[in-house]
Image (cartoon, rainbow, N blue to C red; front, side, top):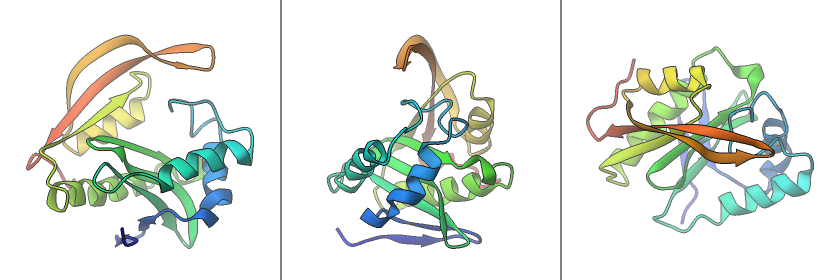
Length: 172
């Protein structure tokens, strides 16, 4: 599949490359960024390399994940490791600027328009208030909750399930 590049007002979202390792490790090794992620912070570049290799090998038509850049540096990721579940992460130095809302609006629009997804799903730790608020602003609605769905390290985490149907997205 040809590399994809999406430009927004302040961001570049693009297909990952092997040389994104250091930039992604900066994000994935930060305990604040991974607090509510499905894995603990990456302790070594080797762990991030495995993660990046998986991102690079997403089969065509099964997902589409993007590296997020601002000002020429990697600041996060947004997209679909596997359709229809969206996942995203932003380095904490970039929080509070509306950058992930900007990135997700572009990714969501592409998912509905290019990939013709009927809906998008999200699985969020209920303690992740910022993420839940962001997804609500984008039009996601809660569809259910479940206890002890993820074990991250030694900690069991719960899930809030959300969905966004095609045509229901909000750009605010």
